[in-house]
Length: 218
Image 1 (cartoon, helix red, strand yellow):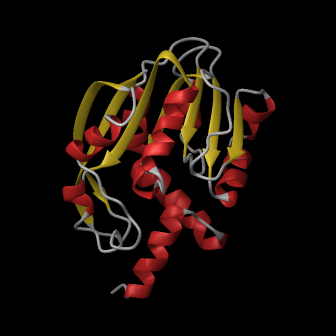
Image 2 (cartoon, one colour; image 1 turned 45 degrees about the vertical axis):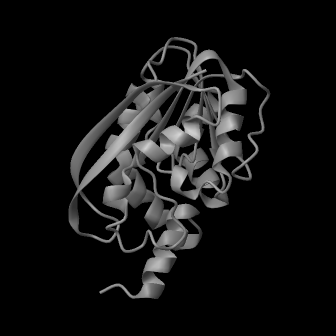
């Protein structure tokens, strides 16, 4: 049975993977979150030539799925984890070499791009860790092109609060709370879509996870 120290360490690794354990955690996250990631991408309505930004790409194991969605896509990934920055570049070396993918480190708040840079933005399971959500969401609005689409995908609070590790530094969301956050910006909510999946949790149990994607438009 996991100790409190084990759970706190897991929470820390989920926030920002580091070291050998971080590589293992990243592989697990890619596997357990893949349906959420695919759902988030599906809500973007990606079109040929789009320039796409992702916050918190992890090991980037999903990138081939995204880049196959349309022609001449260009992807930029942002990470706070130096380890994930390196892992994603290694796993996606072909896309980096062909200049279809670029990976960048950032501080988790200020997005290092000019305004109106991206056609599409998405992020999966990162919102729990946003240190300044109002500022970061405003940053997403700033770098998104007019009429661009941003997708935020997260597991519902009702599910997350049942997990033993979310007591350590997770800010949990439901639709009402995220709607309030979105209202602090000029984003318009295009759609919200909730799915349920039966998965193995980060602590090994099989669970029903409810997750939601908010599709926002500038």
